[in-house]
Structure formats: structure tokens, C-alpha cells
Length: 483
Image (cartoon, rainbow, N blue to C red):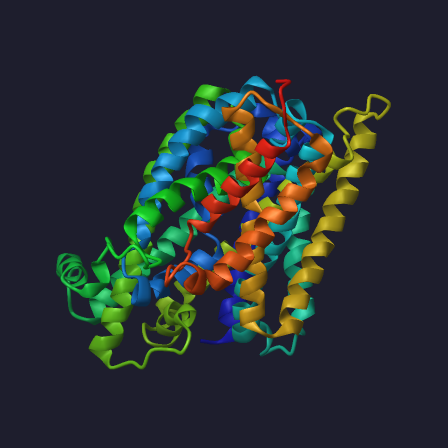
């Protein structure tokens, strides 16, 4: 596929985003940026959150996982459903009752200064590493297929992406992202469905036949009953529930969109609708993954060394130019939400939780806006720096570990919020950061040595639960009787 064709797709898609930006950022204020003036339609938020949660990692990696994990990921997705119910019925009422802009302000109300800063810091750390990693994967593919042909350095490619994202988010913020997510979700879903159709067509099947092929194959196995297996279904159900709670309910980026809805009732309708769509979309992704493997066998295609490369390889090299274009549009649409929501939520978190611009009465609206612009630009260039460093490391195993470490930071958030919601104790606030550091460190070593320590047991996603539990126990040791 010619780089000029891919570049044209990229430019066209970007122009569409800027048209939406122009409409949504008119008369924008700080309130517009942070919570969308509390006027976002709940159904638009629900649909758009699909694209925001489906990063480039999901788009490229999950179809490849089917080769080793089969459909076991659907057990995690089933767990998500229980987690989203908790978010809708427990966390959202709390956030709306306290009228929060940053969800970590709850920790200050409940425990104190250091707990508050610890929660906000862990979000910033995990979001910077996570967003940079996701964007790195997507931009790296576009670098190989497009920008290398024009001899554009990788750092310049990333700079272009960051500047574009900065340009369409710096003014409208969450209000703009709510509507751009709508477009991004549509293109990603289109890429998945068109890819499935083209695979089916090239094999001479109809969709019903393909459905039968997938579910008569070993790839469709969902339930694994070996307790020591990472795919053990009970572990995955529990892990899915807690992953949903922490990576959606305790995540500023995802909750900021919910808090932009007109009312608690609208936010709850959004979460329940999003839950239903998310289940269907994840099933579609796994179905595509099984179809890719069946297609490879049917055509005698050698599988790539890395399962992440399966979808791009088949879409670009074996399904014709239409499939290649559709895949790359889907990939481009995955690249933007990997950073735009992160950039906006990072700006919100730092401005509210560390600079306290909402509490500084001596600041005018223009003064707050100038601070927000400065923070927004600073985080944009921090993301740029981290992404370029990932490329310089040039070791996927090291980068994967960094991404995994970033995931550990959600455990202390789970412990903090659980302790706050389900006990009446206060804590010795100044010692909370120590507990929050020790818990992920303990979990990291347990994960590395679990096979030796626990007689063959391998930790999977359930490590998050253990991380939260260790934090909870640590807070219990620091408890004070005062509520």
C-alpha cells in the first residue's frame, strides 16, 4: 500500500476531528474543559467511551491473544459487568453527591492531605506511562508504513501527533473529546466489522458458516478450570470486576466523561448502556481474532513471531487494499484517544489536585485558564518525551514491564477507596504514601516468584486484588478511631 494513500487517510481523518473541535470549543471556559458544562448527552458519552477504552493495544493485541488464551478473555469481560454495576450504584452517587471535578478530592475529604496527593500522584504516574505506551505502539506502526518512506524521524512523527492532539483539546477539553470519541469509536468498529466480512468473503463463507467455524474450533473455549492456570475462570471473573472498578471507576480520564453528564441519573444510564455495548464489542474483537487464525490456516500463511502483528499483517498483506486502508483508519482512530483523553485528565488532575486552581479565590477566570494552558502544554511534551524514550530503549520486554508496573499503581487506589467506603476508621495520613509504595513493590516480587513460592501458581489479573488487599491491611494498621 502506498504511503501517500495512508497519509491522505490520516490527513482527512484529522481534518474531520478539527471540524468537530471548532464546533464544540466555542465559548469554552474552564468549566467546559473540566466537566463539559455538565451538558454531555449520556448516550453520546456511552458510545464514545467504547473508543476511549479500546486503545491501540486492544485493537492490535487482543485478536492475537486468541491463539494462546482462546476466548477466556470473555470471562474477564463478564467480570467487567459486575464492576460497572458497582461504579454505577456506588461510586457515581458518591462523586455526584460531593460535586467533584477530580475524583481524588474524595480522599482528602475522607483521610487527609497525603492520601489525597498519593491517589492523584498514582493516577498521573500510571496515566503518563500507560498513555505513552499505547500511543507508542500505534505511532510506531504508522512510522513504519508511512513516515519512514518520507524519511521523517520518529521524534518528529510523535511531535506531529502530540501537536495535533494539543490543538484540538487545549480549549474544549472534555466537551470536545466527548464528541471526537464518537467518531473514533465508529471508525474502530467499522474496521473490525469490515475485516471480519473480508476474511469471510475470501474464504468463500457466509457469516453463519464463519460463526460455525469459530465455535467448532478450539479458539472458542471460554472456561478454564485449572486453578493454577492464569486463565482459571474464577480468577478472571474476579479480576475483571476489580479491573473495571479501578481502571474505570477510579480513573479520572473515564470518570471525567461520566461527570460531564447532566445528572447522576444520566451518568448511570450511560454506564449501563456502555456495559452492554462493551460486552458485544469485546466479543466481536475475539471473534475477529479466531477468524484471523482460521484464515491463516486456510491460506497456509505462516504466523508472525509476535501475536500482536497478526491483525496488521493479514489486513495489510493478505486481504487487499480496502482492508489495509480500513485497518489503518481504525489504527489512526485508536491513536488519538490513546492520548487526548489522557492529556485532558492529566491536566485536570494536576490543575485541581496539585495546583488547586478551583480553590484559589484570588485567581480570575483568565488566570485559571492561563495556568491550565501551561499545564496542558507541559503534559503534552512530557508524553512526547516518554514516547521517544520508549523508541530509544528499543526493547519490547522492558517497555512491557514498564506498562505492567504502571498497572500496579491502581492497587493502592483500590485499597484506599475500599477502606474509605467500607470502614469508619480514619488513618494516620502522613504514613499512607509508605503503604502505597510498599504494596505494589510486594506485588511485583510476588508476581515474579509466584511459581516457586506457591507451588506452580501463576498470578494473572487477580494480582490487582492482592495489591488492593495489601494496601487495605496497611491502612488498617494505620487506623484511627475517628471517622
